[in-house]
Image (cartoon, rainbow, N blue to C red):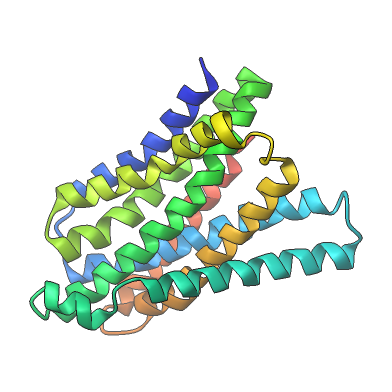
Length: 255
């Protein structure tokens, strides 16, 4: 099968996670569980997958101190990017005007936008990596596609639920998850047509760590605090634990 088709299949699995959100009735408890779940997914993806992979790569070319410094700087740069993205999003007062002053839905919509943006950025280099794996070895491409598809499903669910709550539309929540997943084939197409010479292993690993910084900022600064404080925090912790465990299972399946 063509590597680009494999990348598309992996991306579409994010939409499958969005479809799972159609089974749930939106409510504040579900939103808290979702925030914990999304934070757990991002935390595990960053610290158990993205950063260790880049550490393995750069340690072959840099001394330990240089390797550590490079990773820290890239993570910090990603966090700065995330903070800037957060400032570019509409603030809660502006969103409240659009949602008839409903503070819970306002916070949910901002969370949804941050989560969707972070996972979209995460999916872009993932699509390129799937393309390269399938090009180098079709069997490796299939294994990579399956593993990425497995951990894209909880990501899609994490994107969809806050949109469902904020917009009172399960269809729009599923659509948001689907659009987030399209970043994978989009990244592969760009790499294939225009940017192939720039997508060296060093560049890709650097991008992955940058994205890990974005995801850590969103998880630690937005999602997990929202899940672990407030009156529904008793369900936020199990949500975070489920996100971490499911993402670790997906990472364990990676070839």
